[in-house]
Image (cartoon, rainbow, N blue to C red; front, side, top):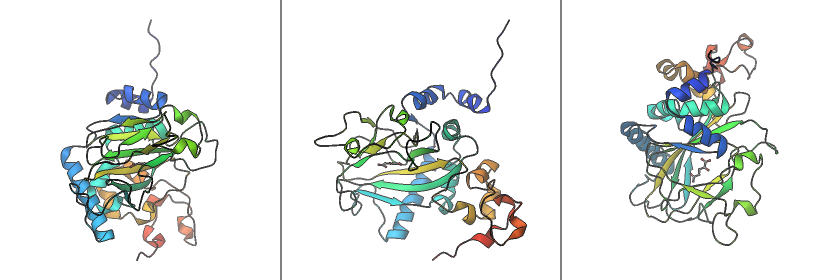
Length: 294
Ligand SMILES: O=C(O)CCC(=O)C(=O)O
């Protein structure tokens, strides 16, 4: 006699991709890393598009080798619609299998943010380090299920010298943000529970929003560049307006999963357009909802 096989599409996908250990790390430690999620060509395209976005919006193109002018911590948000590389990244299969495991297969993308980390703290990060925090900023205690999943895609190597990530293993089970004292990452009172996480370019670092994380000061002149993706359960408010702004052309060249991620299965958001009251966003004329830009 054989016991029944337990069917679950999400678990089957994790097994098919050989990610059982990473799923366990998410459960036990509250974070994991998968190397080689992106190939070299995709990383190069995403890095270029990220640097170009910084150049266009700040008037100063970041130089990954010298880091000049980008000391401390810099962010640029709302990157998804700027380059096809980002469209490919948000559906990378190994990463998405673990995101599904954390927040379900109907999650939506809340932000695609470029992070640049330069030497020291500069004006942008006077402490030098990014204090420990959780990415779920909703009321506490947090629910016993995850509302958001965060992914950091390494577009350059994430080394100890370049201000690597810090995690507090097991902190996802505390269901709260760290206190002011618990946030400290260096000097007197530094939280002794924090451990470093380094990873090569092309890796995805994944954690549920409950996990406490931050990053240490960079001690090298170059820049480390990462993409921060936040996936949210579909009833939550997102940071960026992809639902309203995504073009038909982008939807046509991407998968139905991409459409779900940018909100095309959502029903909320009614106004005077009465003919839309019975339609999800994917079936509406979205041009009627676009806010003027600029
Ligand atoms: O890039 C970092 O140093 C920290 C990233 C982070 O806190 C996040 O993505 O939520």
